[in-house]
Image (cartoon, rainbow, N blue to C red; front, side, top):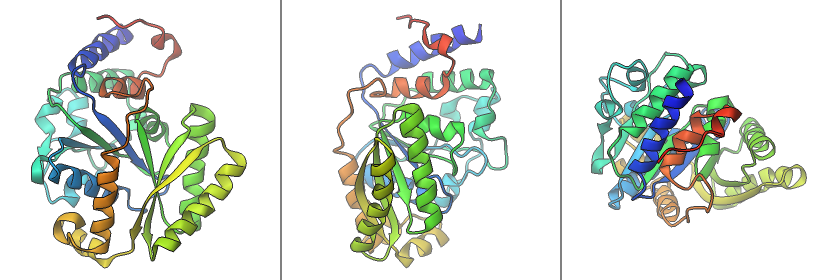
Length: 296
């Protein structure tokens, strides 16, 4: 019964987005503290400033911080939607330049622990969402939980944020290894974050590719080197993001460049090419469920 409802809802989600093509970008990294949320929010804000319709999904249900970093107050969050208290559109908060945020909850159960009924509820929530989007950016939790892996598998582009620390490189490799070997995700876009120079960023990328090229069948592309910049810390203290607070700072210029580049990335010719497949691939995991045909 639950599976049937899930597919009815998923079909509605497909119909909702037939006329629009939403680019889904998942920002992840394996290790915490590498700057995933900063990269996500600055990319989203830069895109919104250029007139794009952008939404950020805070996918860390246990340690949410997207709304806090923007100085926004969320009365309700994704946990209320999953509990059936309100609809998804009721919790969306709007930031500068029309940027929309789906806030998660802090100090609640992890997304990996959602029940099948909550999975179905999340599908229904997205199915009822009326917003037309150009970009959906997903800020994942740290680690390599099933839900983090699912968000990466469901997106069209996976941005892996890496710092020049042994643990960051090791965790990024572990994430890429699992996605590549077990889930057939082969393309990864690498962001070298908090580097002291472009050369250091290239060397960091080389360290990562030296291992992946030897042991994995994965294609890594260095798409940005974000400099170590105190302006980022100052912006966080103000509950702003650096592209807004210090638009001429080195970090802001690099993040703006990354955002402009991301807006030109082609949509791959695969089943994950539209928003309607995002939640379906994210939440419907059972093999027998995948064999059920869609009803149009």
